[in-house]
Image: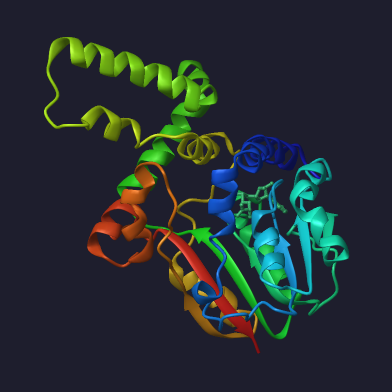
Length: 302
Ligand SMILES: C[S@@+](CC[C@H](N)C(=O)[O-])C[C@H]1O[C@@H](n2cnc3c(N)ncnc32)[C@H](O)[C@@H]1O
């Protein structure tokens, strides 16, 4: 890895991506995110494709999904090499169709036009230069091939404003930092046990089953994804508008540029109540909460 910043980024993500790989429910939920319809492809549309999963993460969940969906070859790229044992636990069954490569999206070790489909989810906001990364991803997409990226958009959504504020607190307040670093299903359960015990000592339930419902809003999956928002060294949250990202595609010779969205199923925590906002990112409630939200975009190289 080129910089201390990249090593720190990798270490933060490695911790939680290994937890995701270890948890069958979370891993299965992540794999289910990849389906042809979401990308606007016909059923079976990944069969035979040569795919790059750039910034695949230690568990390479999307690489796994592309291979399950019949890709001819998936190259999984991530910073350094320490993650490969984790990815290989899932991918080794695909034999030579799966290749693991250490490298950076800022300097991809592939020739121009090497891939039919380039997938880069949640990676660019964590790099030192998202635009440079985008241009590299575009370069290795073959004419007629597709490039898919996700990036956090600009906007004044309440949620991202809170996260930004809390990231500052995480950097400056040792007590808050320790609470976040220790946040997992076990510590959350202890906190909930205490909270609900005090509540039941003082007041009967308002609704039947309310304590169980309240508990069901929190699980390891939620804490794993929340922690990275604080711990990752950089997060270009408010950096780019949807129009800017469209321009990046157009300037790199892409056509048929589309923002896509999906109903994210399988959350066993409070995010199941946010899933409608992920799907309808243009709804006023979604705008209020997430601003421009998570921009998921795909284009075809001309
Ligand atoms: C939010 S995670 C997303 C992982 C995976 N794409 C997924 O959807 O589960 C961001 C990933 O980007 C990786 N990353 C950050 N900077 C990178 C770079 N310059 N080159 C390649 N990967 C990078 C991190 O190590 C991390 O695994």
